Length: 309
Image (cartoon, rainbow, N blue to C red; front, side, top):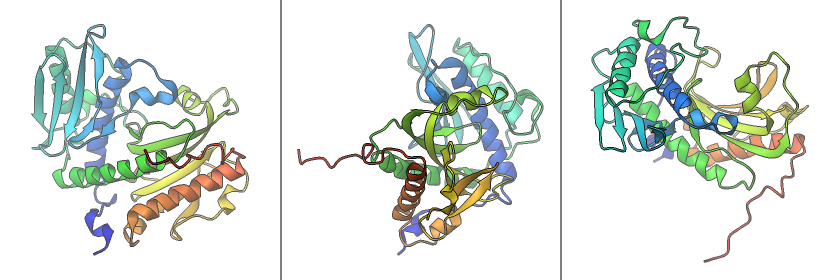
């Protein structure tokens, strides 16, 4: 039996409303973490994490750091859960057509009930929706099957990305979910500063790309890439990177806002005999292309073999 039989299929087309509903839920949760966590470089403090239960914020401090709380979207029970270090807990179902507005209201009420004060910018980020979360009633399409299939894929990808991270001695971010674009990502850094961005660049971009990096990720599709796919890009993008070979053969370079991006669609990964090895090969080939062309010290950044201990 092929390994791909263990991975579910996933489509973007036909599931746009299901994805957007989930995406908006995760943005609300993520904005709460953004406002509550101490700052960390490259926006690493705002992200969410894939776990055995679903997708979570991890521990967030409150009450002047004396207590913590977490918010978890439980894909087994299909409910939103809030827990505190004081032993308090509350939850509500994500089923029965709950709207984004109702989700936002109920989560806010739980936090107030636990005396957790968080004030967020209560509008979606970069989703072409120009109204507050509390007024978004048109998205009420949380779907059990879609969400659980996507989570299963993210959980698997999380493991592969962590294996890939262990091959690099340089600065590497945790494997985490960026809620603004709903992609699971991991990034390697050369250690060198990147050229300063133009004056009009977004603050979020300036902080994210302050240093040379090669990023890798997985997203469930959007209007520009209407199917789930793995990606990699090098910043700053070196001349000629799109001429470098990629593995497996189905991977390709595409233009992304004027810069080359390596793409391997999820559907093509499922066609391989060993998706785990194929995904690692894709990431290694994209990394090699970027690191060579950008003149990274590849040998210095390799992880040496460990002696038996």
